[in-house]
Length: 430
Image 1 (cartoon, rainbow, N blue to C red):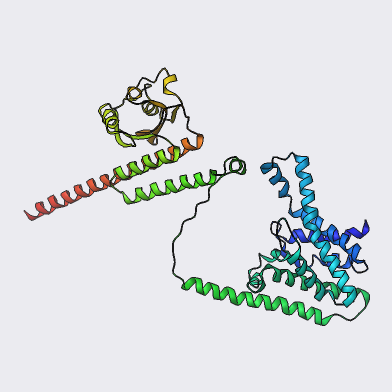
Image 2: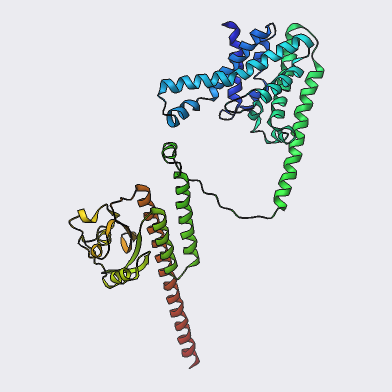
């Protein structure tokens, strides 16, 4: 068991240097304990010592495997833990193969670790099949000047750089503890590799920054759907629908910005988006004049039904979804109007309305209007996300109404000031 202490230390240093823990300087010393444990090992012993180091490395870095197996494979915790251990064994065996190759070649060539470790590590990372591909050199990702050399050889060249420094430090430590002369060439190689890589990276970053500054600028927008893993697993299209909803909300805001004094384009965009994204059959937007709700916009409704709704303005009350939303100043969702004894609005006789959703358009506690969407032919309740989306559209409609009110108010004040100024000029001219 004592022989496993140094490989264990290497495994801990390795995963602490990686992304997530991010103590990247440990990347340049993490192999030194393992190399010391391999000094007198046979190739077979090196295989198991290296495999143990890899197992410990992945134990610290791959804990997320258990979460993945529980959420996406619905594995019970014991089975998820077993899967986690198996992945750590399979992935970690890469370092067993690397250690075997290092000792086997080292016994035949007597090369220093400064040369052996990068050759063994790069060859193994290139050839060893991994379920989750990873490279030792990725630990250097936080150091931007160093990682630029990936241009020249991909992530493997970063692993080689890390291995050269680890090998040189081991060679120096071994020489010091055994009383031999310091391995100056090995140390010089590691210093040159570090300084050369950093210099190349710095010059490249300067060149790239200059190219970015000189390049034409194109504004872009990115949307990140906030969809949980469980929901995405149950419904793979959830992220697409969320992105569609966010895009629609953004488009409505663009319409608002272009329509400073015209509400109709805003209402039409809101109604169309509500029907399309909620899978509804109809959408109506009503304005409140202080006593009655009057139709402002209808979407996807036949002309005769639009005429009927326009001829029958709605008073706040309990008799319809829009009247109830206006009365209570809150969202009203009626899954089946035929099962609601209070729903007496005549529209259900004019059309086969079954499920309705009414959302008040409010400015504070003041009622500005109501948004309504409908399902026909069958009871189809709206989902919480669909309800939240229509509430967002109602908020945007309120913004548009307030913008128009402020626009007209400013116009009126400007007209009054102009008239007052004209009257003043006429008075002074007398």
